[in-house]
Length: 229
Image (tube, rainbow, N blue to C red; front, side, top):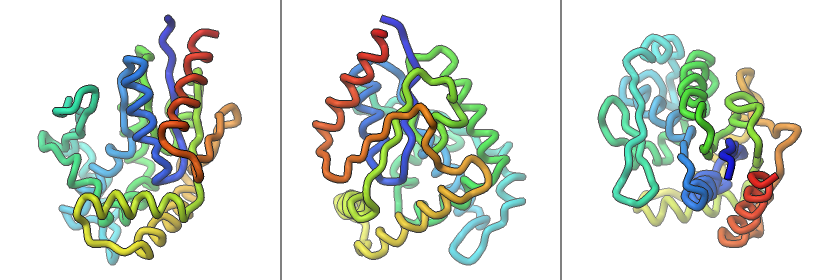
């Protein structure tokens, strides 16, 4: 069976990572969460005072890039991986609403995107990879054999994210989460560098009213058809 590259793009909180992880595990492929990479850079910038609700020092972020080393390491869960920032596992720390509020700002910086895209392209040279993010099918792997673009209503995405944060023990309100989702959509779609957009040859999956099991089965079966073409 030939190996392909699967690019999963779409709006925030559409379940891209969940589906991509499941798909990679089912296929025996490598999974790469590019969103975690941007979140890790954001976490670094926040800890150094470069970005906050009141401040955004883009030049400081760019100058700090040579000091930022990112790696994915296997976690305790089979087939799963966590991201490390300069040797520290920050998988849980980067998933907070505070990081979510700032990550789209960091993602607008061309130097950040250039560095992370180069890393992502290197990871995918041998194919047999499932990668999710905002510009995988348009910028990172424009020649990917399969491109999936995931979308859902802002309300549905906010509800899922809200439940996820509550389950983690975070103290947030649904209103805060919905506002964050809508703000990230606006920034991601309108930024000058690699804006969020559907590749012309991408398959659209609107999962507003679709359960994870149904969604995975449809995507998995479609992927097998592409592999066997």
